[in-house]
Length: 398
Image (cartoon, rainbow, N blue to C red; front, side, top):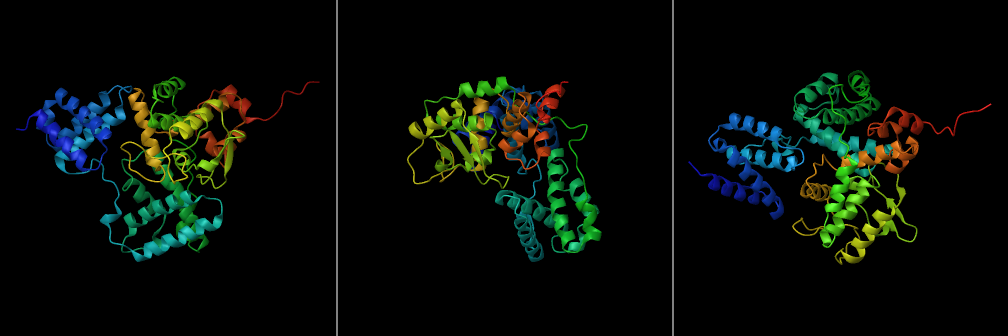
């Protein structure tokens, strides 16, 4: 039987061969070493027994100790042992190319672009989700009249089983948009019921969306080492998300020309919302941006505001995932559990509304075309919500 150190050595080689950075590899193998030292029996368990042990172990990890990294690491160990994905993710490589579906997706894309209300990113993502649905349900046998409420239900209960409730509702939003396209093409009898699907909000059993506490945000912010290039960059990115509510995609797409230094204004373009918007920079965020650009940002031909550095994959701009990964790593080093960078955005929304800012104004700042979208982010008390929802200047006195 292989010893614990041999198992850890095999795991090190496995995660390195799979293209992880040196920093990520160090985070993973240390957690697997801890896992095996606490549960040496794991090295002899079969597939299902080890899966059960891994889930039990994850459930016992304190939330302040980087549970996300720990969970990924020990699940990765299971994958190394049995050569299988922990989750059965959809992979287009598993399907032969279907010319009919590809043509249909091209037509759907043209339809979405003709609406003129969606950004290129939203169009791309929406078409991709629908494409995945069509391949999973109809590859090799696609026809428009097969897209109906029954086929959508089949996909949600089968292809999306194990996914979170928000993920399933998100897909229903995408497929509802596709159904409206089909209705416009004359398939109202079969696609009509899908187009009328309504999802008004989280189910009763759902947890509220994660919202980073102010104390955790302060801990991460203060723990970043701004004596380094990466620290200067990561602090600026963190403040853009935690002070101004930018998405990680917004941050990744920022250009040097998007910062109006003279007037202290940031221009956000190419966001999920098709409308560009300008946001005033607060002193802290503006100073962090200036420190990075003047003292930290490498000289490069790229006009992208933020650039990869260290062990990150090189490029002329930060990828969306790189931005999120950098912030999540900063949180882990600070001992803070970050449930996705959107928890920073939700905190900004809630703080603004709790401070009495009208919801319509919040929606404009965050780049939402609908106030309903903003409402889904809120954690507010009833009295403050009442005041924020109404622009009325005061009570009428006689």
